[in-house]
Length: 378
Ligand code: PMP
Image (cartoon, rainbow, N blue to C red; front, side):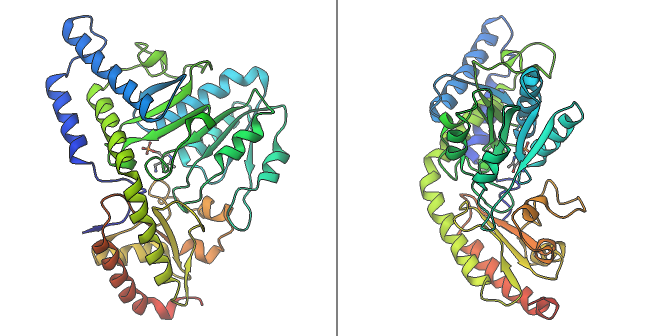
């Protein structure tokens, strides 16, 4: 099997699994328990938190352990919007965001918030002039992603940060799910950001929310008051310790894996662009691990099934939204033509992607192209 759907999820690193099992076996105790074993578990938990702070170069920010980016995005966006409501009601985001951001801000619309979407230029870069034009004194939050999970577009986090300095009440929240381990992340540029462990060879159900401790978020989850009161529920120490491990490994291996992924991206894009009717959609100078192409005129699902029959696992637009019938919002916002959107597929890499995976992909591509070429719009 050739797995090339690493934006959806990655294979856990055996060292991470090993850490998870060891901590669960030896330190299964509740870290909130007052006895000696509870204290030992709590020490482990806090040392994982400290490791993560040091890996991310955090100074004053706090790390909250969650079940992943969906929960983290919901917690911070809803909590921040509600706490800032007396000061303004406008939230700026983009149509490129993951549903855990888009659906959260849409739900906030029902509470009276006003949502504005920043636009993108023809070359898929964020339109900074449009961004400036929609900023005003009512804006309380800007929610954007660092790297898009469908097209690999990289958003200009530093430029956005610099622009909003004139508006001190704006909270700048960034979804760094697809950038951690693939691009450097500068924590100083953001008021809060989120990560999900399974996107960088950690485990599903583990993530973090990083936020500036000076800022207050209205609580949305009530219970025992764990994780500074923001995320009640018995803490999963084994998960949190193994997340710190996954982060350390990802950062150690980042340089080497970026080089290889960039090479794979170039190989696939230059190969398939030679075939009439096949369009490379992925953004120029985008993230190293995301390739997006279209078989123009054929449905993406058909292409994914054909590759699957050849033992190659790729995706249509994004695993989280592929069950929805509507046209992909990311591709639409990035000006991809409609017939290319319906025929688009995503190929995505991680550190375990090898030359052999890419060779197998190209071999299957040639066979599938032969079968489909009469159907393609050129
Ligand atoms: N943001 C982005 C950019 C993502 O790609 C994903 C996962 N597809 C998420 C958020 C949500 O992560 P999770 O499903 O782990 O909560």
